[in-house]
Length: 503
Image (cartoon, one colour):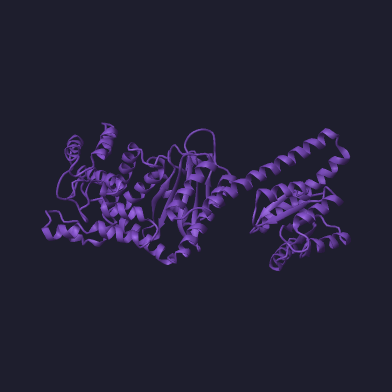
């Protein structure tokens, strides 16, 4: 008999009438006979009178729950296929399902096509199981049971991973923490180092990096893969997997396998989580993209919950898009300068032994440290000649403007402090508050050094870039006056001729 052509009688047990109506209509359209029950007792009464091929049941129901129903059915016929449906997977429930003879379980909300495929599979497995009992030797039956057990153990592993993801996001208390969780979980579960999270800037159709795995190569392949991610977002924003077999034609040179999953909130793309493999024999598969999709969905829910809890949902999105777009919309120098400062700050922070949290804050603040320049007129900001005293006073307002923009989100206090104080001097002669020495936040002192290094190493409209050797001398000479000597020492520790190529 062709299993796919056969029509079966399906029993669906759930105390939610809407679920019964939807599943009944779906299976009937597929040509199957459907019976429904509101609880386990009603289901047993039906099975006493009707021949049923497969039973789908919820766990939590009045009178008799799904596990009790499965146990009763297993006592009557241990080969009868029962599939549990639950919206709250847990280790306890998983163990109980194994004890009660359940052959599979699905996590709500249920995909109806997946539900039908599960039904066809378990019915076929039952048919083969019965055939083996009759026709096969005991050793063959044992192999079949071993295979089924392996599949169930695999499903238990899936539930463990899904529970881990849900638990991690439930403990997140800021959007920035959530971005890093996406990267950390992606790296751990997919077992790769190259994972990155971008925020999508719709106004400029561009991506901004906000988190990446610790050992990821931000340059190189990530840079080459960005246009591909943008194309995925613009052409449907659905999860995309490029396997090893297709990589040569569709991915940058050196990338063997790639996947990206857009993160949506209320139907709108907020960002994208991506990962790639550039060496070895591993290649991403459908399970990997399933896990990453689950991660991004939980991340989206966590971000929305935080925003709703703080009553700043609309403000969060409008402000976030506004300041990222503002940075990207500025001249080419501003955009590249912010990127280089973020990277150099991160390297100096590593040399100083900063924690992972501090490094992430440095990376984020580095990209946005000059966002306040959106409040400075172009005729002042881009002036090719020397500024007047009044114009210079206006320029000095940009750290306060930038801190105010970040502060409106109400989520990133430390980043706000760094942006406000990255032009303070160690001797107290800086701005905007004239802080001195340790009064200046440590991460702001790091950012101050990185900012000046890149500024004097870059061509400007009013002067040429300084040589690498001269730049190093200037930084050393200003240790203890303009800069924190500890930060300067950390920079000199990592400074070398190879690094000079970055300037």
